[in-house]
Length: 170
Image 1 (cartoon, helix red, strand yellow):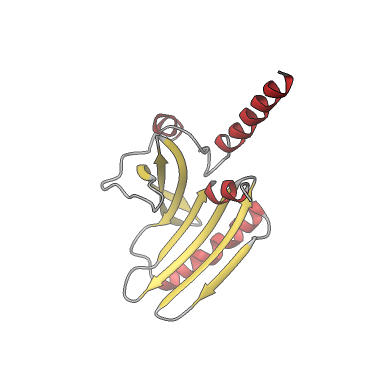
Image 2: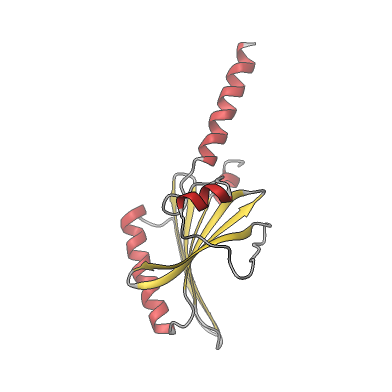
């Protein structure tokens, strides 16, 4: 009987660790849309819903967040009414040079906050990209830059628990 109670207690603690994991600012993994709305009263429903590969849907967004003197939007993605990812993305209309400069500035700011990165890679050509990843507890923080052809550059900071949680299964 003691073993059953101990096992249930341990499992409850581990599930709370994942659900209490900090993402971006005051958001935590597992929050409901209502909880995110309470924490970020300026959050609104996006004009169009975006869906991630794993099925998480962008239900809330915070527009015009100033970071490193540039404007970003923050997208909150939910699966089964639980927050799973926050993506902070540079607003459209920035030049390639401005986006690359912002990538470097964000990388330095994230290094100052989270320490040395755990992974970094880049490639150039028709599709130029760069990514740098950090871990904070069980949260993966990935800074991502992509420029393809004539399209606007993409610059995101992605906060998620998914990869760290999957690593626990190994």
